[in-house]
Amino acid sequence: EPEVTQTPSHQVTQMGQEVILRCVPISNHLYFYWYRQILGQKVEFLVSFYNNEISEKSEIFDDQFSVERPDGSNFTLKIRSTKLEDSAMYFCASTQNINTEAFFGQGTRLTVV
Amino acid sequence: AQSVTQPDIHITVSEGASLELRCNYSYGATPYLFWYVQSPGQGLQLLLKYFSGDTLVQGIKGFEAEFKRSQSSFNLRKPSVHWSDAAEYFCAVGAYGNEKLTFGTGTRLTIIP
Image 1 (spheres, rainbow over the protein chains, first blue to last red):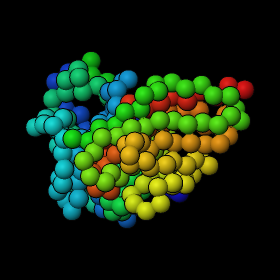
Image 2 (image 1 turned 45 degrees about the vertical axis):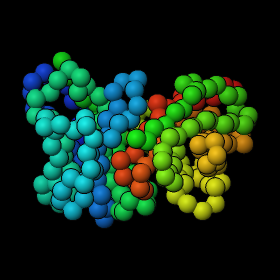
Image 3 (image 1 turned 90 degrees about the horizontal axis):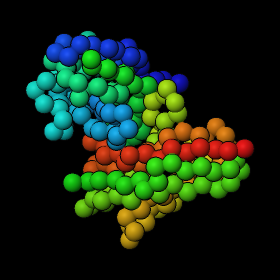
Image 4 (image 1 turned 45 degrees about the horizontal axis):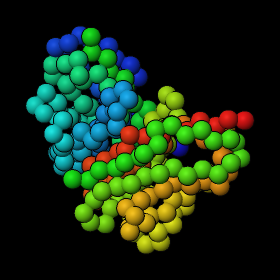
């Protein structure tokens, strides 16, 4: 069964450092998403990406965040200068279109120290 | 703005017993509604979704949910739970399809023998 793959599963980084979270969406999917879940809190939408550009973003997704689909297979989330409050589980998701099932990856746990 | 409330943080059910997980949403128009399940160390898996049509929707693993517009609810049910159903369950609402999902805080389900 096709699946969304995220790497690494756990990343520890120092405050102020840049971090890149990587995702390989399902190959024929066209819409891509990042969500995050701070420990004990809700899963929150960050950004959606379609046709090589951001289609929606939340107020959380400020200038410190960026997304990219550099090579047609990977979908990355970059946090330019990490803060302690960026510590969370980050989920990548993809779907063929907005009316079909969105498949989520297993998540990357980011710990900022 | 859309929102989702899952009033039960933790539910314990005996194996073989019936289950109902509550979900209330707030959204101005016809919502797109979802139930996801997350097992430990796993990503989010879609159980079922409601976009339109029949208000009783069937999902995977024997789950069903009923959309009640008058009550702004989308409760998840299963007639007989199995030990493997122990997981975290999330209700979510979307403005249009999968775009920009808003999740509830989740309900942790524990199954006792």
